[in-house]
Image 1 (tube, rainbow, N blue to C red):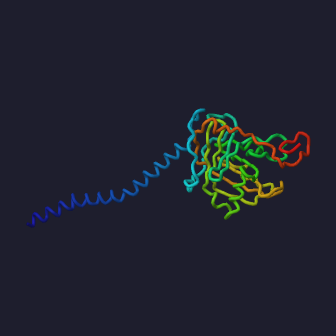
Image 2: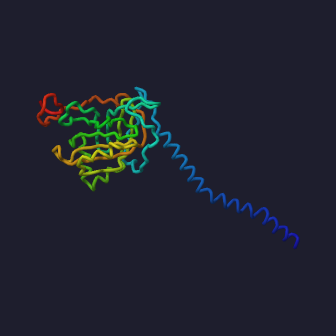
Image 3: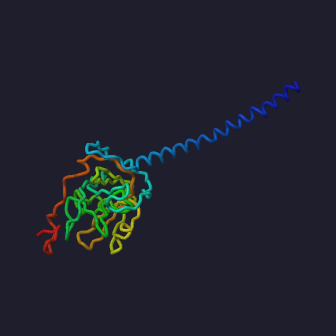
Length: 269
């Protein structure tokens, strides 16, 4: 019996106990393995999603994301080589053609500001030009679009900003279509109210990553403070030709002021 007891203790010490320890170690690794796999899948998915996709003229548009699934945030793309708004290296920049905020019912063509503009157009968003046009989504710079705070334009941005400082807008999707049949999806991260002064554009002008800025006026006068809404990129989706090239080009507002100089635009003659 003593020999049997000694043998059993030896078997437990040399075989059974190591197996038990191994099983416990493996069980302890399971949560880490699952978490690690999840991180890998998420990262792999984002890497795929953030790549521009080939867009054919007859591409089937993806359904617009709803605001109910926009509760998370993703950091901006920061690994794009600096290029200008023309072909450079392996990338080509394409100009913005349309902007939508599905949750707020905003859907406007994007147009260039006409020369000698004295008053912004109606029924369109325009892009800002400083030392360069800020109208090329995907580049390491800001895309800056502005429109009147009017019905069917950017009025809903202003209205939402007046409720709890626009907190409900954080996380909403904004979509900017480009001339190459792409839909750049952004997510709102900041609502800046009562902006004024000559430095109001500095942050956007000096942006080194892909960003989207939307601006509208908080009052009826040229001197009125502005509302700025900032969004960061989420990804790029193929769009069809019709979706990326809306027919509207904007028009002179019926109540636009009288033109002050010859050749002025956006005003009434």
